[in-house]
Length: 301
Image (cartoon, rainbow, N blue to C red; front, side, top):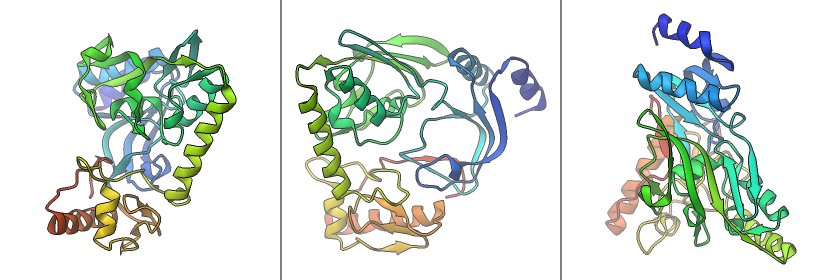
């Protein structure tokens, strides 16, 4: 970024700016080199102004939620990281409609809507990350996806501040065509429940199932690979006897083979070497090329 651009941003930006910020501090994998600029906007309009400035001047930027589902390279991120976790962490409920900012913590949202007597997203209670990240990848669990309940998406798309309906968006299994958009907020339509305790128990049961099957005590990014059609990535990896295989500080979890964890100060290079080893073994054994669910960001893999 040129000094003139930075000076112009400083003239209108009300939030905080950090320089050469280590991304390992902001990712659930605890991996990643420095970002040139790390912006924390003061409010929603501050965020919109910042994103539009970057777009209009063709400056590279990455929008960061909670830092799950991403692997940042060892050389970090050239350009700007714009953090939204605190900026867009708000929720409003009117009847069965919930409007929520993209920075809202998804597990927290599930708890909050249940407390307000609503059901429909309790299956998503164990998915780490923010609402915005969940929307971008159409996150889901236990036969439920977030786009099952979305009625409206407010975002910045192609340099314009727009509102979209689900029919305006291409969404499928762990995919949307919003990857180049900045999600600002969404509205969901849920259902009123007459038995809050039953919904709470369902959420609790699913969380316990998740905790028993996933290595949540180790730094991880969630599932590394998408499930191929009519199969499970974890099953394929386990069938290759890869559980417990380690490359540097990166390890294929003994608890769930589709979780590659930061076992011992892993680098992005360690993780990528292990990812490639897993992909090669599965392809050689099953002729199936696993597709990454985790997003690769920055340089130095």
